[in-house]
Length: 322
Image 1: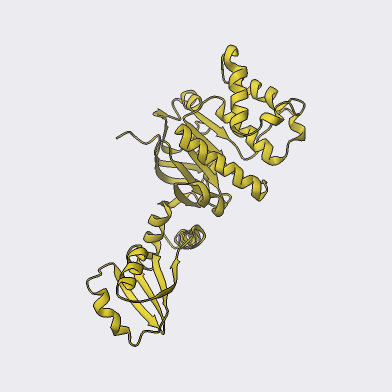
Image 2: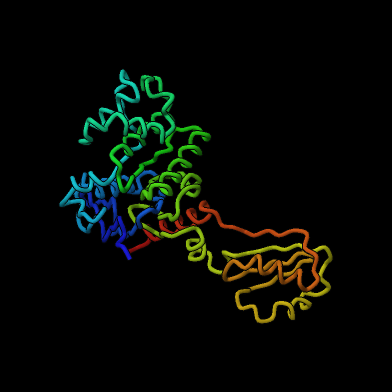
C-alpha cells in the first residue's frame, strides 16, 4: 500500500501566543478530493502555506509527494499546483499569452509549450476565448484560467484555496464538475479549502472540519454522520396503506434484526432508528410480509447539520476552562 501523498503530522503554527494551526494530523491519498472546510480565519490558508513551504511550521511536519515541505520547498512546488482565492493576470495580455508566460516561468521547454498551452485551455473550456484579453474575463473565466495556470505544469497535487469565491451558481457547478472530472481522469489529488458547505459536499470524497486551527473531525459523510449522531444517523419512515392495528404486530416480522435500535408506530407510519442504513432491506421485509407501502423517507444528515454540530462543540471546547 502506497503512503499518503499528503501527510501532516502534529503541524502547528504560532504567531506569538496565537495558535493559527493546532497539532494538525491529516493524511490524503493519491487521487482523492479532500475538502478542508471551515470559517474564514480557521487556519486553512496557513495550513496550505506550510504545505507549500511558504511558511515554516512552529513544530510538526508537512510532507507532500514524499518531500518535507520545509526542507525541500522547491521539490514540492514542482509537484504541486496552487491556486489562491484571487488569481492575478496581465490584463493587456490574452489568455494564451498569460498561460505561455506561466509555462515559461515553470521551465516548460519552448518546443512543446504552445501545444501544451492549447491543450490545457481546451481542458478548462477556454479554447474559444484564448485570444481574448483577460481584462474582459468574468470572475468564472479567470478562475478557469487560474486552473489552467496550475495544470500546465502537470502537477500530481492541486491545492485550491476558496476557488468558487465570487462565481455565480451555474459557474460554480461547472467548475466543480471540471475538478471532479480532472481528478478521476488524470488521478489528480485535490485539496480544496472552502467555507461553502454545499460546494464541498458536491465534489469531495472526504471532508475535514477545521475550526480555530483544529481539525475537529474528518471522513466521508456517512462516517461523520455516524460519529456525530450515532444510531440516530439512520432514521427511516415508512408509510403503509392501512393503519397497523397494534405496534406489537410488527414484533414477529422484526425479530432478530440487531441493526434496529428503536421502532415507533403512529397509525399507518412506522419510524425505524437503526445503527446502519438498512432502508432497502426494511422495505423488502415489509412487502414480503404483506404490507403495502405508500411512501419511504430516509432522513439524511447533510454536511450543514454535521458541520454545525461539530462547529458548536468545537467552540464550546475551545471556550471551556483548561
